[in-house]
Length: 296
Image (cartoon, rainbow, N blue to C red; front, top):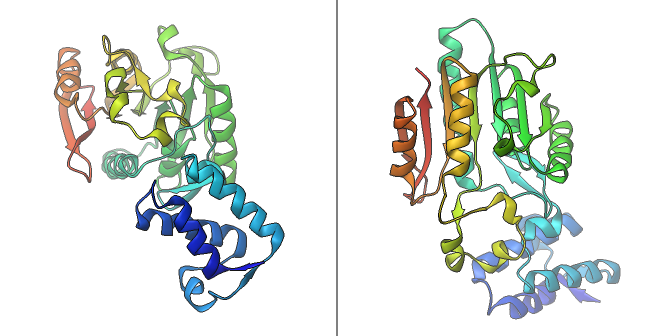
C-alpha cells in the first residue's frame, strides 16, 4: 500500500519528461477525484491517505496510458464542456475551449432572434461528434427542434447517450453530407425542410499541419473528424454552405468553427456564395476560429 502523497511523487516522476508539471498535477487531481472522491483541498488535508491495492491497480493502469500519451478524457471516458458532463471515447473528438466560445456566440445570437420573432428556433448541427454543440445549446435556449448529423454511427451512439444524460431532446441522423444533394431526408415525409440556424465544426486540419500536432491527438483522436486534404481544405465548408443556402430560413444564420489559417479564404467562399453580414471572430488564443454568416 502507498499514501496519496507518495504516489503523487511516483506519478510525477514517471510523467515529468512528457508533460509540464501543471498538467501532471491536473491529471493526478482528475484521477483522485474519480477513484477516491478527493477535491483539490483533500490532496493537502488527506495526503497521508492510504490507497487500497485495487485502486492502486487502476491508478497504475491509467498512469501507463498517460505515459503513452493517451488523453486523460479517453482514459476516464468523460469530460466537461460548457459546464456540462459529456461521455467521450476514441470515436469522438475531445471538445475544446474554442468550441465553447462558438456555442456562447450562437446562444447570444439566438436570443436576439427570439426577441424578433414569437416562433421558436430550429437548429441543425452538422458533424456533431459527441453532441457537445447542440446539447449545450439545448440546455441554454428553448428551441422548436434541434437536429444533429454525423457520418460515424459510433460517434452518434455516444451523442445519443450524452443527450439522454443531459436530458435534452435532439434528433440524430447518420448522414454523409458529401454524398447528399439536400437535407430533406431529415424531414419526416422527406419534403423541403428548413432551419433557422445551421452550425458545423467539420474536419479542417490539413495534412501539412500534422507535423505541428501533439502525439496525443494524432495517435488517439479520430482522423475522419480531423483531417482534410491539402488540395481541397474547404471541401466540407463549401458543401455545408450549399446545403445552408437551400435549407436556411429567411434571415437564417450559418456558424462555422474554422481552420485558423484559412479564415479569409472561408470568408471569401461564403461571400462568393451570396452570404451576407459575414463576421470572422478570433478565439481566446487570438486565432481566427469562428464565422457567422446570414443567408439574406
